[in-house]
Amino acid sequence: MASSRPRRADTTPATTLDATAWVEGAFDVLAEGGIDAVRIEPLAKRLGVTRGSFYWHFKDRETLHTAILKEWRKQQSYRIGSRIESQSCAPDERLKQTLALPNSTPRAKRAAAIELAIRLWAGHDTNAAKAVKHIDHVRLTYYAKLFTEMGLAKSEARKRAFMLYAALLAQAYVFTDSETDVSADLAALLVRP
Amino acid sequence: MASSRPRRADTTPATTLDATAWVEGAFDVLAEGGIDAVRIEPLAKRLGVTRGSFYWHFKDRETLHTAILKEWRKQQSYRIGSRIESQSCAPDERLKQTLALPNSTPRAKRAAAIELAIRLWAGHDTNAAKAVKHIDHVRLTYYAKLFTEMGLAKSEARKRAFMLYAALLAQAYVFTDSETDVSADLAALLVRP
DNA sequence: TTGCCACCATACACAAGTGTATGTTGTTAT
DNA sequence: ATAACAACATACACTTGTGTATGGTGGCAA
Image (cartoon, rainbow over all chains, first blue to last red; front, side):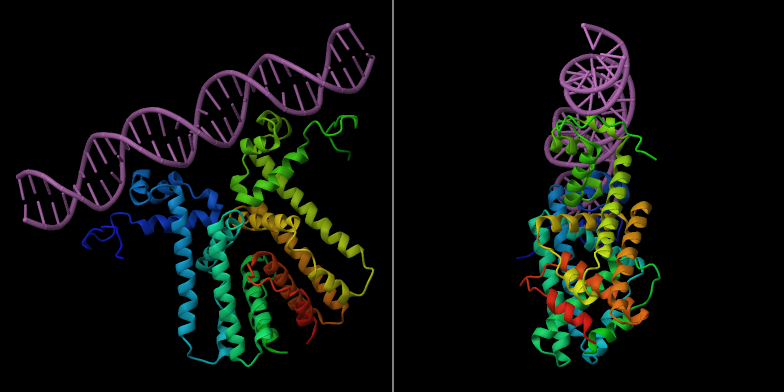
């Protein structure tokens, strides 16, 4: 079950391009123009190579698209997984930490745009829809477990989880003019009643 | 201030194409593939005409893009405006009506996909960003007024408005597997404390 | 050193989209 | 009935992107 890709020895540092470099570049243009903008020639120009490099690492455009989905699923699954493992503090404290996640850094904005593009993509692509559905399920169950650990019933915890998820998404997608940092207030509003 | 477009008399029913027909068709492909997929030739094929029709009604592609934004602003502004006028019942009842808006009909799914595409577009286009910012502001202020009419303070009303908006967006964008109709529960959760 | 091979460039044929210039048709006005 | 015009089709030149086939280059092993 080993990888069938005969990679070179680890002597050459980073002069040559990797398949993951193409996927990372694809994430950039995906965030800017959607999946339809993920084209090979603009990507090659951005990476400073020709399309000959692409067709060495990938079969065609569709292969890159599936690689994008696979990488996104992996990253987001790992993101939640590492959060589950680090159960260092109380659940209500972890809730506040979740709501206080950075959402205005360039890194966070890029991730939000990528996810937005994938959700739009999921409207007319079965595989993208499966990926989004899976990640939504993973996140919602994690948030629900957070609330059940705080003593809430299962039904109530799932409602709160949905509201928490909604708040996080809205913080990323909605243009709040006054930039009010509602994270602390939202935590209070979600824990209270 | 009359329209400077010398339209033909109302004798011919619908045999000829209108500029708005192009914009409506553009909304369809916008919902499916983002703003980058709004191309003239595929649109012409879908509408059953050639590009000669397009270049009669519009100057170029960018003109169509601005027309899309203008039409979206108009539609969404009208949508909120008509809701403000119809103050027939109590604010808490109107809140429930807002949360019970249809979100699974093809019409609603199309509107959600269009808005998703425009939000992604707003990431790298100034005019699109202005439109989204404006509509977000209009909706948030309307929801906040709803809560102040229910007796809440201004600061609290704005937090609830954000949560309400977040819930509506999440209902449209998140893939909830069990399709739990959380609208009634969300209304209770937002009104309660 | 020489031969292999990973990696990329180059060249070619093809498809699709853009803009413009111009031809064509049906309708309205006189 | 015929000139005028709105609305679209057609043809052309150009650009951009795709996929493939093939050529070139540097490093590593024997």
